[in-house]
Amino acid sequence: MPSYRIREAAELLGVSDDTMRRWADAGRIGTEQHNGRRTVDGVDLARFAQDIAAGAERPTPRPVVSESARNRFVGLVTEVVRDTVMAKVDIQAGPHRIVSLMSREAADELGLEPGVLAVASVKATNVVIEVPAQPAAQPAQPGAQSAAQSGDPDPAVPPHQGPKAKEH
Image 1: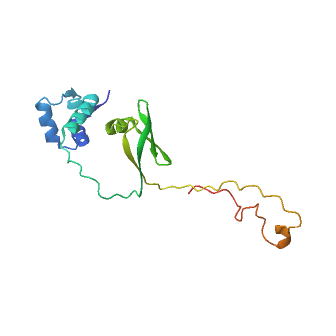
Image 2: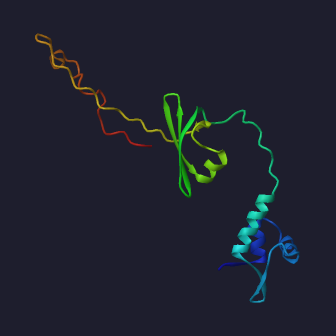
Image 3: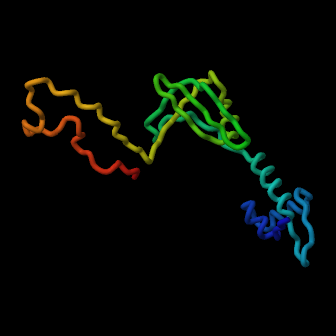
């Protein structure tokens, strides 16, 4: 089980050594003597750090008036599948089905359940473009000049058929 010296514990909590000592002296966190130095048990320190964070004042969030994501899809949550760590959330936004993978904690905090109105904001740094297969060429009409005879490219062959597109 890990333990931390007062100086290390203070650094992890973002406070001074003196503050850490005062908290220990006041009984807010327990300490032990280890090789002649005061130490704090790692599990106790982690729990204490969570308690401090939970009690910290946070500014009230203001409404969002501008954001960098340009693709916003307003829709209804149609399915939420949760496991112990992650959640898969499906949103139907008009003809678009949006699927988001997020932490279960985030899905729980947002109250995501089927029927909830939600906005999916999409900011992609990687977009893959694919070219679908071209339809088969229609049989030539009797007496019609073929593309090869006319000098035109074969309409059944895509004009820029090269190596498969790569993801960049």
